[in-house]
Length: 544
Image (tube, rainbow, N blue to C red; front, side):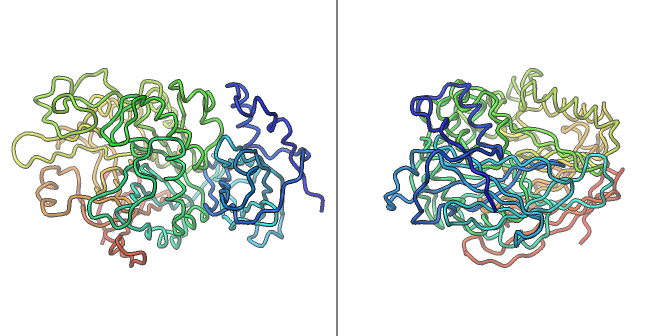
Protein backbone atom coordinates (compact mmCIF):
# COMPACT_ATOMS: atom_id res chain seq x y z
CA UNK A 1 0.00 0.00 0.00
CA UNK A 2 1.15 3.55 -0.67
CA UNK A 3 1.50 5.49 2.54
CA UNK A 4 0.63 9.21 2.66
CA UNK A 5 3.65 11.35 3.41
CA UNK A 6 4.09 14.74 4.94
CA UNK A 7 5.88 17.69 3.38
CA UNK A 8 7.82 19.54 6.06
CA UNK A 9 9.70 21.87 3.75
CA UNK A 10 7.87 24.95 5.01
CA UNK A 11 8.25 23.81 8.60
CA UNK A 12 11.98 23.42 8.04
CA UNK A 13 12.30 26.88 6.50
CA UNK A 14 15.36 28.26 8.22
CA UNK A 15 14.62 31.72 9.60
CA UNK A 16 10.98 31.30 10.52
CA UNK A 17 11.70 27.91 12.06
CA UNK A 18 14.19 29.50 14.41
CA UNK A 19 12.36 32.74 15.18
CA UNK A 20 8.69 32.10 14.40
CA UNK A 21 6.10 34.83 14.53
CA UNK A 22 3.07 34.41 16.75
CA UNK A 23 0.95 33.69 13.66
CA UNK A 24 3.45 31.08 12.47
CA UNK A 25 3.46 29.44 15.89
CA UNK A 26 -0.28 28.97 15.87
CA UNK A 27 -0.35 27.89 12.23
CA UNK A 28 2.44 25.37 12.75
CA UNK A 29 0.96 24.01 15.94
CA UNK A 30 -2.41 23.47 14.29
CA UNK A 31 -0.72 21.92 11.26
CA UNK A 32 1.31 19.63 13.49
CA UNK A 33 -1.89 18.40 15.16
CA UNK A 34 -3.67 17.55 11.90
CA UNK A 35 -3.36 14.33 9.87
CA UNK A 36 -2.47 16.08 6.62
CA UNK A 37 -1.04 14.47 3.48
CA UNK A 38 2.05 16.03 1.86
CA UNK A 39 5.33 14.68 0.47
CA UNK A 40 8.62 14.47 2.32
CA UNK A 41 11.21 17.10 1.48
CA UNK A 42 14.11 14.81 2.37
CA UNK A 43 14.68 11.29 3.61
CA UNK A 44 15.40 10.68 7.27
CA UNK A 45 18.27 8.48 8.32
CA UNK A 46 17.45 5.16 10.02
CA UNK A 47 17.19 5.44 13.78
CA UNK A 48 19.67 3.76 16.06
CA UNK A 49 17.43 3.87 19.14
CA UNK A 50 13.79 3.70 20.25
CA UNK A 51 12.36 7.25 20.22
CA UNK A 52 9.07 6.23 21.92
CA UNK A 53 10.41 5.65 25.43
CA UNK A 54 7.80 7.98 26.98
CA UNK A 55 4.95 5.87 25.66
CA UNK A 56 1.70 7.02 24.08
CA UNK A 57 -1.45 8.69 25.40
CA UNK A 58 -4.85 9.93 24.30
CA UNK A 59 -7.18 12.57 25.65
CA UNK A 60 -9.52 15.50 25.05
CA UNK A 61 -12.17 13.11 23.67
CA UNK A 62 -15.58 13.97 22.30
CA UNK A 63 -18.11 11.95 20.30
CA UNK A 64 -16.25 12.23 16.97
CA UNK A 65 -12.64 13.05 17.83
CA UNK A 66 -9.74 12.36 20.16
CA UNK A 67 -6.16 13.60 20.57
CA UNK A 68 -3.38 11.03 20.19
CA UNK A 69 -0.07 11.92 21.86
CA UNK A 70 3.52 10.84 21.96
CA UNK A 71 6.88 12.56 22.35
CA UNK A 72 10.01 11.53 20.51
CA UNK A 73 13.07 11.25 22.69
CA UNK A 74 16.42 11.65 20.92
CA UNK A 75 19.39 9.55 21.92
CA UNK A 76 22.20 12.02 22.57
CA UNK A 77 24.74 9.28 21.91
CA UNK A 78 23.30 8.26 18.55
CA UNK A 79 25.08 10.88 16.51
CA UNK A 80 21.83 11.87 14.79
CA UNK A 81 21.99 15.59 15.47
CA UNK A 82 19.13 16.40 13.05
CA UNK A 83 16.71 14.76 15.45
CA UNK A 84 17.38 17.30 18.19
CA UNK A 85 16.98 20.39 16.02
CA UNK A 86 14.67 19.59 13.10
CA UNK A 87 10.98 18.81 12.84
CA UNK A 88 10.31 15.11 12.30
CA UNK A 89 7.48 13.36 10.47
CA UNK A 90 5.86 10.46 12.27
CA UNK A 91 3.58 7.78 10.87
CA UNK A 92 0.35 7.10 12.75
CA UNK A 93 -2.00 4.16 12.45
CA UNK A 94 -5.50 3.67 13.84
CA UNK A 95 -7.69 0.58 13.65
CA UNK A 96 -10.66 -1.12 15.25
CA UNK A 97 -8.53 -3.98 16.51
CA UNK A 98 -5.21 -4.26 18.30
CA UNK A 99 -3.68 -6.17 15.37
CA UNK A 100 -4.45 -3.27 12.97
CA UNK A 101 -6.30 -5.42 10.45
CA UNK A 102 -9.85 -4.06 10.74
CA UNK A 103 -10.58 -0.62 9.26
CA UNK A 104 -6.94 0.36 9.45
CA UNK A 105 -6.15 3.98 8.62
CA UNK A 106 -2.77 5.68 8.51
CA UNK A 107 -1.12 8.99 7.82
CA UNK A 108 1.67 11.25 9.00
CA UNK A 109 1.97 14.10 11.45
CA UNK A 110 4.74 16.56 12.37
CA UNK A 111 6.64 16.38 15.66
CA UNK A 112 7.88 19.97 16.06
CA UNK A 113 11.36 20.43 17.49
CA UNK A 114 10.14 23.67 19.08
CA UNK A 115 7.60 21.63 21.09
CA UNK A 116 10.09 19.00 22.26
CA UNK A 117 9.11 16.74 19.34
CA UNK A 118 5.72 16.14 20.90
CA UNK A 119 2.83 14.92 18.76
CA UNK A 120 -0.76 16.06 19.29
CA UNK A 121 -2.72 14.35 16.53
CA UNK A 122 -6.33 15.56 16.50
CA UNK A 123 -8.07 12.68 14.82
CA UNK A 124 -11.51 13.67 13.50
CA UNK A 125 -14.39 11.87 11.80
CA UNK A 126 -14.48 8.91 14.18
CA UNK A 127 -17.62 6.97 15.07
CA UNK A 128 -19.17 7.80 18.41
CA UNK A 129 -18.97 5.53 21.45
CA UNK A 130 -16.24 3.35 19.95
CA UNK A 131 -12.93 1.91 21.08
CA UNK A 132 -9.94 2.35 18.77
CA UNK A 133 -6.33 1.18 18.79
CA UNK A 134 -3.44 3.38 17.69
CA UNK A 135 0.34 3.45 17.38
CA UNK A 136 3.10 5.60 15.93
CA UNK A 137 6.12 4.71 13.83
CA UNK A 138 9.39 6.45 13.04
CA UNK A 139 11.67 4.67 10.63
CA UNK A 140 11.51 0.98 11.49
CA UNK A 141 10.59 1.62 15.13
CA UNK A 142 7.00 1.38 16.38
CA UNK A 143 5.56 2.71 19.60
CA UNK A 144 3.57 0.59 21.99
CA UNK A 145 -0.10 0.19 21.07
CA UNK A 146 -2.56 2.50 22.75
CA UNK A 147 -6.29 2.09 23.21
CA UNK A 148 -8.67 5.02 23.17
CA UNK A 149 -12.33 5.73 22.70
CA UNK A 150 -14.77 8.31 21.49
CA UNK A 151 -17.62 9.41 23.72
CA UNK A 152 -21.30 8.66 23.08
CA UNK A 153 -23.24 11.16 20.97
CA UNK A 154 -24.56 13.94 23.22
CA UNK A 155 -28.14 12.78 22.54
CA UNK A 156 -27.48 9.08 23.08
CA UNK A 157 -29.06 7.22 25.97
CA UNK A 158 -26.19 5.77 27.99
CA UNK A 159 -26.37 3.26 30.81
CA UNK A 160 -22.87 3.44 32.27
CA UNK A 161 -19.77 5.59 32.63
CA UNK A 162 -16.81 4.30 34.62
CA UNK A 163 -14.00 6.72 35.47
CA UNK A 164 -11.05 6.89 37.83
CA UNK A 165 -9.82 10.11 39.44
CA UNK A 166 -6.20 10.65 40.46
CA UNK A 167 -3.78 13.43 41.42
CA UNK A 168 -0.59 14.29 43.29
CA UNK A 169 2.14 11.93 42.08
CA UNK A 170 5.31 13.05 43.83
CA UNK A 171 8.38 11.14 42.69
CA UNK A 172 10.30 11.42 45.96
CA UNK A 173 7.46 10.01 48.06
CA UNK A 174 7.10 6.68 46.32
CA UNK A 175 6.35 4.58 43.28
CA UNK A 176 3.35 5.04 41.02
CA UNK A 177 2.26 1.41 41.42
CA UNK A 178 -1.38 2.48 41.85
CA UNK A 179 -1.50 2.71 38.06
CA UNK A 180 -0.64 -0.98 37.74
CA UNK A 181 -3.90 -1.69 39.55
CA UNK A 182 -5.88 1.05 37.82
CA UNK A 183 -5.12 -0.60 34.49
CA UNK A 184 -7.30 -3.53 35.61
CA UNK A 185 -10.38 -1.38 36.31
CA UNK A 186 -11.92 -1.46 32.81
CA UNK A 187 -12.32 2.32 32.71
CA UNK A 188 -13.88 4.56 30.10
CA UNK A 189 -11.55 7.42 31.03
CA UNK A 190 -9.30 8.92 33.70
CA UNK A 191 -9.77 12.32 35.33
CA UNK A 192 -6.36 13.65 36.35
CA UNK A 193 -6.83 16.57 38.72
CA UNK A 194 -3.42 18.15 39.11
CA UNK A 195 0.16 17.83 40.35
CA UNK A 196 1.29 15.50 37.57
CA UNK A 197 4.85 16.51 38.43
CA UNK A 198 6.47 18.18 41.43
CA UNK A 199 9.09 20.84 40.97
CA UNK A 200 11.12 20.09 44.11
CA UNK A 201 14.76 19.02 44.18
CA UNK A 202 14.09 16.35 46.80
CA UNK A 203 12.34 15.55 50.07
CA UNK A 204 13.10 14.51 53.62
CA UNK A 205 13.26 10.73 53.94
CA UNK A 206 12.92 10.43 50.17
CA UNK A 207 12.11 7.03 48.69
CA UNK A 208 13.96 8.10 45.54
CA UNK A 209 15.32 11.40 44.28
CA UNK A 210 14.38 13.14 41.05
CA UNK A 211 17.06 14.13 38.60
CA UNK A 212 17.84 17.72 37.76
CA UNK A 213 17.40 19.55 41.08
CA UNK A 214 14.92 22.44 41.33
CA UNK A 215 12.82 22.91 38.20
CA UNK A 216 12.97 26.39 36.64
CA UNK A 217 13.94 26.32 32.96
CA UNK A 218 12.02 24.85 30.03
CA UNK A 219 14.52 22.02 29.78
CA UNK A 220 14.08 21.39 33.53
CA UNK A 221 10.31 21.01 33.15
CA UNK A 222 10.72 18.79 30.10
CA UNK A 223 13.16 16.54 31.96
CA UNK A 224 10.87 16.29 34.99
CA UNK A 225 7.91 15.25 32.82
CA UNK A 226 10.11 12.72 31.05
CA UNK A 227 11.19 11.35 34.42
CA UNK A 228 7.60 10.89 35.59
CA UNK A 229 6.54 9.41 32.28
CA UNK A 230 9.35 6.88 32.52
CA UNK A 231 7.19 5.00 35.06
CA UNK A 232 5.92 1.96 33.20
CA UNK A 233 2.67 1.76 35.16
CA UNK A 234 1.81 5.36 34.31
CA UNK A 235 2.64 4.74 30.65
CA UNK A 236 0.45 1.65 30.61
CA UNK A 237 -2.49 3.53 32.13
CA UNK A 238 -2.18 6.31 29.55
CA UNK A 239 -2.30 3.62 26.88
CA UNK A 240 -5.47 2.08 28.34
CA UNK A 241 -8.03 4.86 27.78
CA UNK A 242 -8.34 8.62 27.20
CA UNK A 243 -7.54 11.10 29.96
CA UNK A 244 -9.11 14.44 30.80
CA UNK A 245 -6.39 16.48 32.50
CA UNK A 246 -6.11 19.68 34.46
CA UNK A 247 -3.27 21.09 36.55
CA UNK A 248 -2.72 22.41 40.05
CA UNK A 249 0.27 24.30 41.42
CA UNK A 250 3.25 21.94 41.24
CA UNK A 251 3.22 21.83 37.47
CA UNK A 252 4.62 25.36 37.92
CA UNK A 253 5.54 26.11 41.53
CA UNK A 254 4.07 25.40 44.95
CA UNK A 255 1.00 27.52 45.81
CA UNK A 256 1.36 30.06 43.03
CA UNK A 257 -1.72 32.18 42.27
CA UNK A 258 -2.25 33.44 38.73
CA UNK A 259 0.83 35.51 37.91
CA UNK A 260 1.86 35.77 41.58
CA UNK A 261 4.69 33.54 42.75
CA UNK A 262 4.20 30.95 45.45
CA UNK A 263 6.61 29.60 48.04
CA UNK A 264 9.08 27.24 46.46
CA UNK A 265 12.84 27.07 46.16
CA UNK A 266 12.67 27.13 42.37
CA UNK A 267 11.15 30.62 42.00
CA UNK A 268 12.93 32.59 39.30
CA UNK A 269 13.18 36.36 39.27
CA UNK A 270 10.74 36.62 36.37
CA UNK A 271 7.90 34.39 37.55
CA UNK A 272 5.68 35.20 34.55
CA UNK A 273 8.39 33.83 32.25
CA UNK A 274 8.77 30.76 34.43
CA UNK A 275 5.03 30.13 34.34
CA UNK A 276 5.07 30.41 30.55
CA UNK A 277 7.82 27.80 30.35
CA UNK A 278 5.90 25.50 32.68
CA UNK A 279 2.68 25.91 30.70
CA UNK A 280 4.50 25.11 27.47
CA UNK A 281 5.95 21.94 28.99
CA UNK A 282 2.51 20.92 30.26
CA UNK A 283 1.10 21.26 26.75
CA UNK A 284 4.02 19.33 25.29
CA UNK A 285 3.39 16.36 27.56
CA UNK A 286 -0.41 16.17 27.71
CA UNK A 287 -2.96 15.01 25.10
CA UNK A 288 -4.40 18.51 24.63
CA UNK A 289 -5.80 20.19 21.55
CA UNK A 290 -3.86 22.98 19.85
CA UNK A 291 -6.75 25.34 20.65
CA UNK A 292 -5.61 25.30 24.29
CA UNK A 293 -2.82 27.64 23.12
CA UNK A 294 -5.15 30.60 22.64
CA UNK A 295 -2.35 32.90 21.47
CA UNK A 296 0.27 30.29 20.66
CA UNK A 297 3.41 29.56 22.65
CA UNK A 298 4.64 33.09 22.06
CA UNK A 299 1.54 34.43 23.81
CA UNK A 300 2.32 32.50 26.98
CA UNK A 301 5.43 34.61 27.52
CA UNK A 302 3.18 37.68 27.72
CA UNK A 303 0.77 36.13 30.21
CA UNK A 304 -1.74 34.92 27.62
CA UNK A 305 -4.32 32.35 28.63
CA UNK A 306 -3.75 28.65 28.12
CA UNK A 307 -7.30 27.39 28.22
CA UNK A 308 -7.67 23.93 29.70
CA UNK A 309 -11.11 24.25 31.28
CA UNK A 310 -14.16 23.05 29.40
CA UNK A 311 -17.27 20.89 29.31
CA UNK A 312 -17.70 17.39 27.90
CA UNK A 313 -21.13 15.73 27.58
CA UNK A 314 -21.24 11.97 28.00
CA UNK A 315 -24.41 11.09 26.12
CA UNK A 316 -27.54 11.90 28.12
CA UNK A 317 -25.93 10.43 31.23
CA UNK A 318 -23.57 13.18 32.43
CA UNK A 319 -22.01 16.57 31.90
CA UNK A 320 -18.31 16.68 32.83
CA UNK A 321 -16.95 20.13 33.71
CA UNK A 322 -13.16 20.36 33.98
CA UNK A 323 -12.00 23.48 35.86
CA UNK A 324 -8.77 25.46 36.24
CA UNK A 325 -8.43 27.11 39.65
CA UNK A 326 -4.76 28.20 39.33
CA UNK A 327 -4.34 30.34 36.25
CA UNK A 328 -6.92 33.03 37.01
CA UNK A 329 -7.11 33.17 40.80
CA UNK A 330 -6.47 36.10 43.11
CA UNK A 331 -3.58 35.89 45.53
CA UNK A 332 -4.11 34.12 48.85
CA UNK A 333 -4.87 36.47 51.76
CA UNK A 334 -3.74 36.87 55.36
CA UNK A 335 -0.51 34.92 55.28
CA UNK A 336 1.81 35.69 58.16
CA UNK A 337 4.00 38.70 57.47
CA UNK A 338 2.44 38.98 54.01
CA UNK A 339 4.28 35.92 52.74
CA UNK A 340 3.64 34.22 49.42
CA UNK A 341 1.81 30.94 49.05
CA UNK A 342 -0.59 29.31 51.50
CA UNK A 343 -1.28 29.13 55.20
CA UNK A 344 -3.84 28.33 57.87
CA UNK A 345 -5.96 31.36 58.71
CA UNK A 346 -8.56 32.36 61.31
CA UNK A 347 -11.15 34.04 59.05
CA UNK A 348 -12.39 36.16 61.94
CA UNK A 349 -8.97 37.82 61.96
CA UNK A 350 -8.84 38.36 58.19
CA UNK A 351 -10.76 41.33 56.81
CA UNK A 352 -10.30 40.20 53.19
CA UNK A 353 -11.65 36.69 53.76
CA UNK A 354 -15.21 37.39 52.62
CA UNK A 355 -14.35 40.04 50.04
CA UNK A 356 -17.04 39.50 47.35
CA UNK A 357 -14.66 40.56 44.58
CA UNK A 358 -12.14 37.80 45.16
CA UNK A 359 -12.13 34.92 42.69
CA UNK A 360 -10.64 31.46 42.41
CA UNK A 361 -11.70 30.72 38.84
CA UNK A 362 -11.51 34.22 37.32
CA UNK A 363 -14.47 36.16 35.96
CA UNK A 364 -14.70 34.63 32.45
CA UNK A 365 -14.42 31.05 33.71
CA UNK A 366 -17.04 31.72 36.40
CA UNK A 367 -19.43 33.18 33.83
CA UNK A 368 -18.85 30.24 31.49
CA UNK A 369 -19.47 27.74 34.31
CA UNK A 370 -22.65 29.37 35.56
CA UNK A 371 -24.00 29.69 32.02
CA UNK A 372 -23.21 25.99 31.57
CA UNK A 373 -25.19 25.27 34.73
CA UNK A 374 -28.07 27.29 33.30
CA UNK A 375 -27.91 25.36 30.01
CA UNK A 376 -27.83 22.04 31.90
CA UNK A 377 -31.28 22.77 33.25
CA UNK A 378 -32.71 21.95 29.82
CA UNK A 379 -30.46 19.14 28.58
CA UNK A 380 -31.92 16.29 30.70
CA UNK A 381 -28.56 14.80 31.65
CA UNK A 382 -28.73 12.92 34.92
CA UNK A 383 -25.39 13.90 36.53
CA UNK A 384 -23.37 17.11 36.55
CA UNK A 385 -19.77 16.27 37.45
CA UNK A 386 -17.38 19.09 38.37
CA UNK A 387 -13.78 17.83 38.19
CA UNK A 388 -11.41 20.35 39.76
CA UNK A 389 -8.19 20.62 41.72
CA UNK A 390 -8.97 20.69 45.40
CA UNK A 391 -11.41 20.10 48.25
CA UNK A 392 -14.63 22.13 48.00
CA UNK A 393 -16.32 21.86 51.39
CA UNK A 394 -15.23 23.73 54.51
CA UNK A 395 -12.43 21.91 56.32
CA UNK A 396 -11.82 23.36 59.78
CA UNK A 397 -8.61 22.10 61.38
CA UNK A 398 -9.06 23.87 64.72
CA UNK A 399 -10.67 21.60 67.28
CA UNK A 400 -13.23 23.36 69.47
CA UNK A 401 -14.32 26.98 69.22
CA UNK A 402 -13.17 29.14 66.31
CA UNK A 403 -11.94 28.25 62.85
CA UNK A 404 -8.63 27.49 61.20
CA UNK A 405 -9.01 27.28 57.42
CA UNK A 406 -6.52 26.72 54.62
CA UNK A 407 -6.37 29.78 52.39
CA UNK A 408 -5.14 28.07 49.21
CA UNK A 409 -8.31 26.07 48.47
CA UNK A 410 -12.00 26.93 48.22
CA UNK A 411 -12.02 27.85 51.93
CA UNK A 412 -9.72 30.76 51.14
CA UNK A 413 -12.11 32.03 48.46
CA UNK A 414 -15.37 31.84 50.39
CA UNK A 415 -17.28 34.39 48.31
CA UNK A 416 -16.35 32.54 45.11
CA UNK A 417 -17.52 29.25 46.64
CA UNK A 418 -20.79 30.84 47.70
CA UNK A 419 -21.34 32.16 44.18
CA UNK A 420 -20.86 28.65 42.85
CA UNK A 421 -23.26 26.98 45.28
CA UNK A 422 -25.78 29.77 44.67
CA UNK A 423 -25.54 29.17 40.94
CA UNK A 424 -26.19 25.46 41.48
CA UNK A 425 -29.35 26.33 43.38
CA UNK A 426 -30.51 29.14 41.08
CA UNK A 427 -30.29 26.89 38.05
CA UNK A 428 -31.57 23.79 39.87
CA UNK A 429 -28.45 21.89 38.78
CA UNK A 430 -29.31 18.20 38.69
CA UNK A 431 -27.25 15.85 40.82
CA UNK A 432 -24.00 17.82 41.29
CA UNK A 433 -20.95 15.64 41.97
CA UNK A 434 -17.70 17.45 42.82
CA UNK A 435 -14.41 15.56 42.48
CA UNK A 436 -11.10 17.03 43.65
CA UNK A 437 -7.54 16.34 44.75
CA UNK A 438 -4.60 18.42 46.05
CA UNK A 439 -4.89 17.76 49.80
CA UNK A 440 -3.32 14.25 49.72
CA UNK A 441 -6.27 12.87 51.73
CA UNK A 442 -9.53 11.09 50.98
CA UNK A 443 -12.59 13.14 51.98
CA UNK A 444 -16.18 12.18 51.18
CA UNK A 445 -19.20 14.29 52.03
CA UNK A 446 -21.82 16.80 51.00
CA UNK A 447 -21.89 20.12 49.19
CA UNK A 448 -23.79 22.49 51.47
CA UNK A 449 -25.88 25.47 50.42
CA UNK A 450 -23.87 27.48 52.96
CA UNK A 451 -20.44 26.09 53.81
CA UNK A 452 -20.47 27.82 57.22
CA UNK A 453 -23.84 26.40 58.30
CA UNK A 454 -23.91 22.70 59.04
CA UNK A 455 -27.70 22.72 59.08
CA UNK A 456 -28.06 24.29 55.62
CA UNK A 457 -29.43 22.25 52.72
CA UNK A 458 -27.39 19.54 51.05
CA UNK A 459 -27.24 20.34 47.33
CA UNK A 460 -24.66 17.84 46.06
CA UNK A 461 -21.92 15.38 47.00
CA UNK A 462 -18.13 15.54 47.03
CA UNK A 463 -15.25 13.09 46.64
CA UNK A 464 -11.71 14.37 47.18
CA UNK A 465 -8.85 11.98 46.38
CA UNK A 466 -5.79 10.96 48.38
CA UNK A 467 -3.21 11.24 45.59
CA UNK A 468 -0.96 8.65 44.01
CA UNK A 469 2.05 9.10 46.33
CA UNK A 470 2.18 12.55 47.98
CA UNK A 471 2.41 12.28 51.76
CA UNK A 472 -0.18 13.43 54.27
CA UNK A 473 -0.40 14.05 58.00
CA UNK A 474 -1.79 10.76 59.28
CA UNK A 475 -4.99 9.82 61.08
CA UNK A 476 -4.16 10.61 64.72
CA UNK A 477 -6.66 13.51 64.90
CA UNK A 478 -8.94 12.48 62.08
CA UNK A 479 -11.96 11.45 64.15
CA UNK A 480 -11.99 14.80 65.90
CA UNK A 481 -11.62 16.66 62.61
CA UNK A 482 -14.54 14.76 61.11
CA UNK A 483 -16.63 15.74 64.13
CA UNK A 484 -15.59 19.34 63.53
CA UNK A 485 -16.76 19.09 59.91
CA UNK A 486 -19.98 17.01 60.00
CA UNK A 487 -20.82 17.64 56.32
CA UNK A 488 -18.09 15.05 55.60
CA UNK A 489 -18.96 11.43 56.41
CA UNK A 490 -15.55 9.86 55.76
CA UNK A 491 -11.89 10.80 55.63
CA UNK A 492 -8.51 9.08 55.58
CA UNK A 493 -5.14 10.78 55.80
CA UNK A 494 -2.76 7.85 55.45
CA UNK A 495 -3.37 5.62 52.44
CA UNK A 496 -2.54 6.51 48.82
CA UNK A 497 -4.32 5.55 45.63
CA UNK A 498 -7.24 6.62 43.46
CA UNK A 499 -11.02 6.59 43.27
CA UNK A 500 -13.32 4.80 40.83
CA UNK A 501 -16.79 6.20 40.11
CA UNK A 502 -19.39 4.30 38.12
CA UNK A 503 -22.34 6.34 36.89
CA UNK A 504 -25.70 4.92 35.86
CA UNK A 505 -29.05 6.65 35.30
CA UNK A 506 -30.19 5.64 38.78
CA UNK A 507 -27.11 6.02 40.98
CA UNK A 508 -23.37 6.39 41.29
CA UNK A 509 -21.07 4.04 43.14
CA UNK A 510 -17.66 5.23 44.29
CA UNK A 511 -14.88 2.98 45.54
CA UNK A 512 -11.69 4.27 47.14
CA UNK A 513 -8.72 2.12 46.10
CA UNK A 514 -5.50 2.23 48.15
CA UNK A 515 -2.14 0.48 47.95
CA UNK A 516 -0.38 -0.98 50.96
CA UNK A 517 2.97 0.82 50.72
CA UNK A 518 3.96 3.37 48.07
CA UNK A 519 7.58 2.99 49.13
CA UNK A 520 7.66 -0.37 47.36
CA UNK A 521 7.64 -0.77 43.55
CA UNK A 522 5.19 -3.68 43.81
CA UNK A 523 2.08 -3.23 45.95
CA UNK A 524 -1.16 -4.88 46.94
CA UNK A 525 -4.47 -3.12 46.41
CA UNK A 526 -7.50 -2.96 48.64
CA UNK A 527 -10.80 -1.10 48.69
CA UNK A 528 -10.77 1.35 51.59
CA UNK A 529 -14.45 2.27 51.42
CA UNK A 530 -17.49 2.22 49.11
CA UNK A 531 -20.24 4.81 48.69
CA UNK A 532 -23.49 5.23 46.80
CA UNK A 533 -25.56 8.23 45.75
CA UNK A 534 -29.07 7.87 44.38
CA UNK A 535 -30.09 10.14 41.51
CA UNK A 536 -32.30 12.93 42.77
CA UNK A 537 -31.11 12.59 46.38
CA UNK A 538 -28.05 14.70 47.36
CA UNK A 539 -27.01 12.25 50.06
CA UNK A 540 -23.91 10.06 50.03
CA UNK A 541 -24.18 6.74 51.85
CA UNK A 542 -21.39 4.40 52.86
CA UNK A 543 -22.31 0.92 51.65
CA UNK A 544 -19.59 -1.39 52.99
